[in-house]
Length: 209
Ligand code: HEM
View 1 (tube, rainbow, N blue to C red):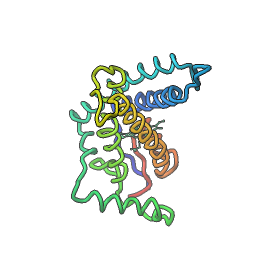
View 2: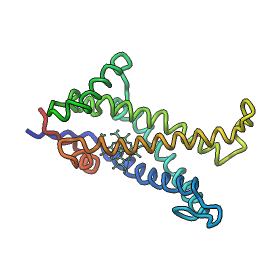
View 3: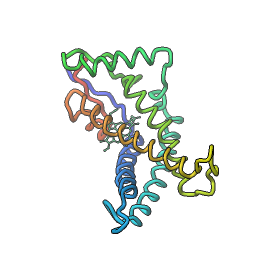
View 4: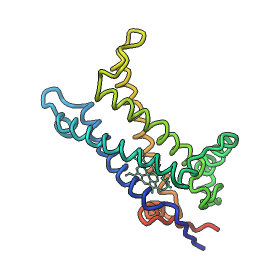
């Protein structure tokens, strides 16, 4: 029997669609800047356009990120991001085992989705890592590149600007990997489209229970 839960309030859906679009723009413009051809001054798009678009998208995604954090502090959505450090490693293992084997044998989800807990342990861990570790580092290092004068001069003979740049690119890379895995795990609902529909209409549908 299928059941429905209202898990994605309007504000989280609005935040998410803007975040996803801006994130894609940041990836495309970021890659374009990194691989710009010295002769044509362009890769996917022209270098100057890539910089302008990247800076603009970064500014809007930062404001949007502040809305995400404020919304999670002010509403009960924030409780879904609370990690229980006593059980997390065991829970992660159980969820991983389900994705690796159980899922293919038709076993039931080990952590059924409820209004109290809408993420499974792997989702929660990945979302907390992306939103509360990755994003802040990406924003701070991005600001460091936009305003080079605020960087430390250097450490152990390595330029501060270079370290900031490498950190920015590395975290950007890992968040892009997060996005690929995120898109895949979002196809693992009752049907491949179920979770995407949930993020559009707010209701999570499941065949279990
Ligand atoms: C084309 C891009 C994207 C698509 C299609 C997409 C799809 C989805 C879907 C279907 C859900 C609901 C399923 C679930 O609860 O896990 C979701 C939730 C979520 N996504 Fe994405 N996503 C995209 C990009 C991103 C990006 C770039 C980030 C962050 C870097 C992100 C972070 C999140 C977070 C934190 C949630 C949980 C929100 C909440 O309910 O509190 N997503 N996404």
